[in-house]
Length: 69
Image (cartoon, rainbow, N blue to C red; front, side, top):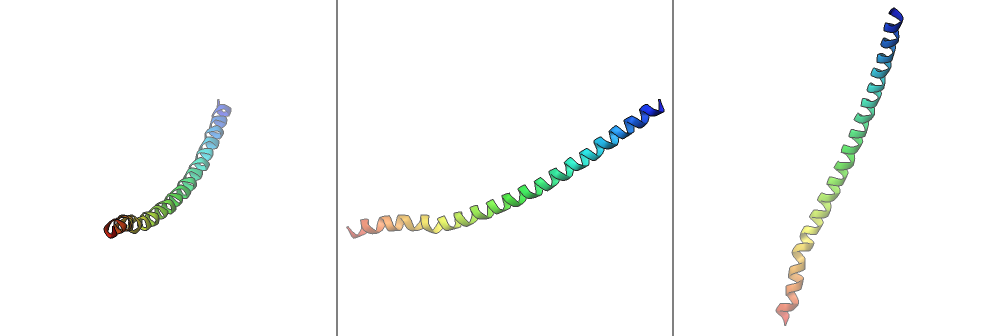
């Protein structure tokens, strides 16, 4: 009976350690994913800001020749 308890304790201890390792890996991956998403968000913001003036200029350019005609 005692030997079975020891074996079970060893099994559970190993499972717990495996769980800790998996959790640490998930935390690392989450941090990496957050950093990636932050970079993507920044890139999107820059591109949207660049498109803002371009989108505003295009109708003026298109209306320019129409006014000249």
